[in-house]
Length: 239
Image (cartoon, rainbow, N blue to C red; front, side, top):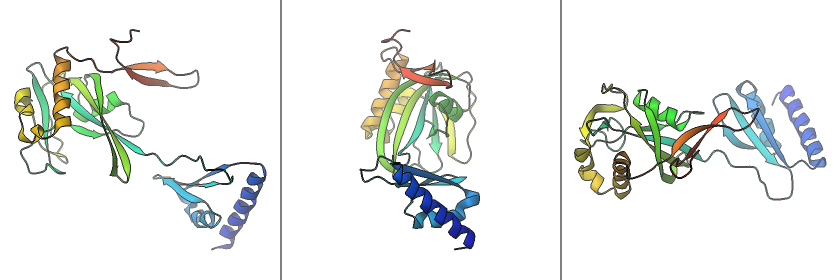
């Protein structure tokens, strides 16, 4: 450890003792990548890794004798499934290039993860690469320890296409085309997937007016905060 790093460690030690004397409980230390050399001195003073991003690492410590209330790192990833049906009652389906269904004849709806800070409807539109009218149909799947020990939330959305032109994403899809809904629903693998089949049935029911899903409403949440989207059943709760 360099003399400069040792000096930082001493400063941190003094600060921790002072904060503890002031009855401070939790300490968060955000170190930019440029200061990553200070991680080891911080660890030696009892701080622990909390999470890391591309530009920084976050460390934490709990100074109180009471149980720690420092929250865990973000525990979920959020995904989108796009149920896109045209006026011919055909569904936009893809054959994946990767994953469990690669090199098979299985068709599935486009899916993907939301980008950081991206709204559900924006993610669904981005995934199919069209400007569409979007109705969030249902929150359908909550599973745990999927990727990097994180839980997974997947939202299924109904989208109304403005064009019938398709464009294959070469890195992910082996094929993309419009398929009649009955043909899509009759795939062998779907008969064994009760949840997936129920999802498709609910989507079809929604198209036929038999099921009401959630719709996004852009809401102002405070004078100093931007708009946020609130998803609710607009038929049951009129504006």
